[in-house]
Image (tube, rainbow, N blue to C red):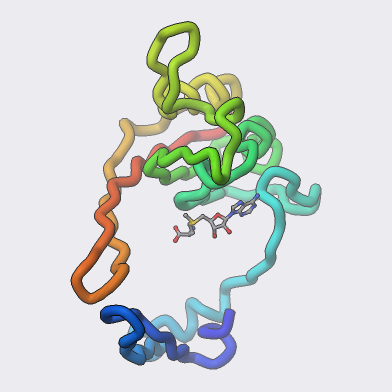
Length: 164
Ligand SMILES: C[S@@+](CC[C@H](N)C(=O)[O-])C[C@H]1O[C@@H](n2cnc3c(N)ncnc32)[C@H](O)[C@@H]1O
């Protein structure tokens, strides 16, 4: 939002200990000035979205589901907000943690009645009645820089679901 308003932002990155570097990014460098004006930001609880958020052709939830307190609440009714033929695009590394989500609410990444249930299995169960899995899941690697010498390498899985 700040980048949209001001055209640039400055931010600090940690190098080591208390040593940091100042960085800057500008829309002009990325040729994104026009695109930025087409974006509307708003904030809400994904598990309890306002009814007005509806009628979308695409909903993208990037690295969100394993950070929700109850992702089934988000996933179970998201079809009501997507036009028929529209898409739900999810990415997640499925890094479930009780810090964010009680284990009862993990949709996968656990054993149920002694059987391994993956998050992809859970997504198929929760989304299957309102969506078709449009393509095979796709790996989306990304790197988060923690310090100059430490990086977290994660491989999210992207699944694309078409609304029936
Ligand atoms: C792992 S971060 C991913 C951030 C960003 N989408 C990305 O890929 O860089 C997870 C995000 O989910 C947000 N989040 C957690 N619970 C939420 C909820 N109930 N409703 C909406 N957002 C939530 C957190 O604030 C955090 O920004």
